Length: 260
Ligand code: NAD
Image (cartoon, rainbow, N blue to C red; front, side):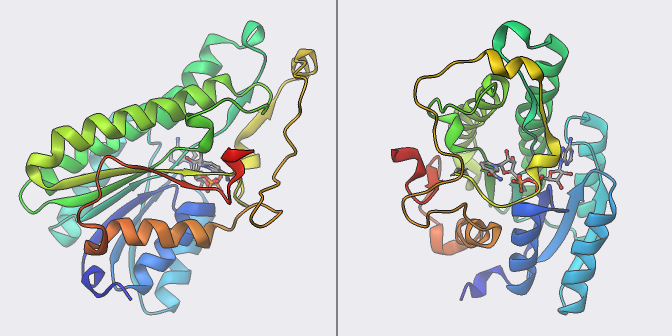
């Protein structure tokens, strides 16, 4: 369906699980060579196996996206292996510690911002030298939480990091247009993934009283959370020349959840 993706190279963060894994598998099925980046975990190898057994090409790099040195090394490894880079999916993220603002520890705030926002900045920074000559597509995973407040208790750090990603993507789209590097940001609603494992609610959350509690995971279109594969199709479109005139755009993929 997207023939121009064949033999192109992508680096995908958070590729061991959820949206990142589903996207890596789909891009590899379109013929892309994929560098799978995630924390060191057996799930990363599982993604690679899944791609290899379907005849695709993948390498893995274990990185913490908030670590500047490791991110730089991951990009060097892609350049060394395939000599080109056409697409980056800056997708790794955590919900982090959930706490009322008055109880949020500054180091917990910093961790969420570091992984979600600084990690995105580092991936874009290191994509540029690899894409400057031939252009490329960068896709950033934000969230519907980045553009409005929900009664997801205690997510002030997460929402701030996700709003920051949207602003950053727009700045990057303007700045990098001269190199024909497109930058878009996707805003999923609730998607069925393993993100709960990187969510640390605190007992103090009980203190937060919000009059209307948003019904968890319900979406007008499907009455249920979306699937990672549905997000993967949007990312593949943004990776492909089929979206060649789209940059600096925020795309919602939420079954109308953000309209509730
Ligand atoms: P997931 O937990 O299934 O996958 C996230 C992956 O990121 C994991 O494999 C994890 O190991 C990796 N990761 C976490 N911290 C990392 C770090 N410091 N360095 C490298 N890798 C790291 O969750 P997911 O839902 O697929 O999350 C992907 C993105 O989607 C995140 O940015 C998240 O904020 C966003 N998102 C998710 C939802 C949802 O409902 N699942 C909704 C909106 C946005």
